[in-house]
Amino acid sequence: MTALVEPIAGNYFVAAYPPFSFWNSDQLPALNQILRRPASRAPLGLYVHVPFCQKKCDYCYYLSLIGQPASVVGRYLDNVVKELSIYSRQPAI
Image (cartoon, rainbow, N blue to C red; front, side, top):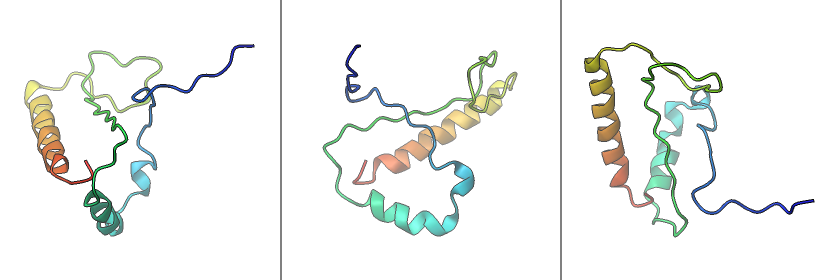
């Protein structure tokens, strides 16, 4: 029997948990408090989903919007960059 080996840092995959349907605006003060904490020495991984695929893969459970115009894709990407910029200024990040 082969021994299980822990994945190295950066090889963990965590989807949105808890699911977005469980989040609400009452939780924003707690989130902001966490983001104001000093940064941890632990590595941080981030997955940013870009939901504009040419074709949806059979195994994928993420939202995919096929055949969107370039203006929609561009607007989405611009807003992802803006949001990441906001979070990047937080001490915890």
